[in-house]
Length: 292
Image (cartoon, helix red, strand yellow):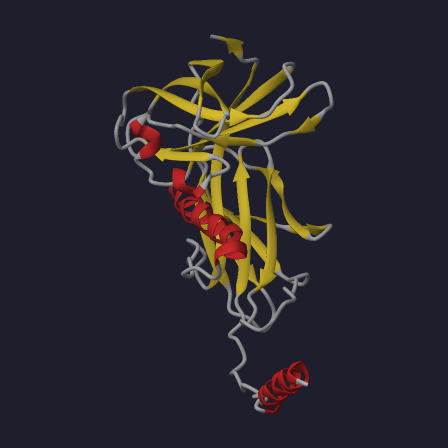
């Protein structure tokens, strides 16, 4: 009888909670939709643009822009009109380093958007040495070392390093993480705590000088593998966007386990819209790590 009374009391409590629920319709004003431009472009390739429209906080479908007119200017001279193919807009010309590229984006019944950037000159990898198994961290990961040498040009410069390991036996990409980095060029960015997929840094500590930087990373691999090093000279807009994107992507992954974090506003260089239009040049090298 006592168990029955307890169960009856719990049922009454739950019923009272359910009866207190009230659905409230919030009448939010319609979102002011703007053009969203996303494009990272480099020399020797057409300029490729993904175009969409911004949405409201309660919307979950991102509308495409399939009726836009995108005019390309080179050094402020109208040169090309991008064509649409398979969901993207492409230029007819191949981009070149050192030229100013800008877009005028026109979508019916929306404000026009404008953006511009310049592809920086390529910085050549003078030397790179990759050594495996230099140490083991507290989690048991084997740490490898990459020493990278290059000559920095005069004036402000921005860089990105991507390491792309490939299992040559099974022909699939495997994971890589940057660990135990102490080089001040890398640590000065303050981004290592966000588990970045690439490393970005500026030349504030070595402007116009030769730079030798050490990068440490962990990688689960079979003994037979090659490492592709992408060393990019990036524009300031590219750098500022990636700087915010690293923290943004980290917050998305951690929200799953720790709840919502403070909002992070991504950098944008689109006047009259949102998104990014940023340029880079790249030097690449395939490396086979050797034993210490």
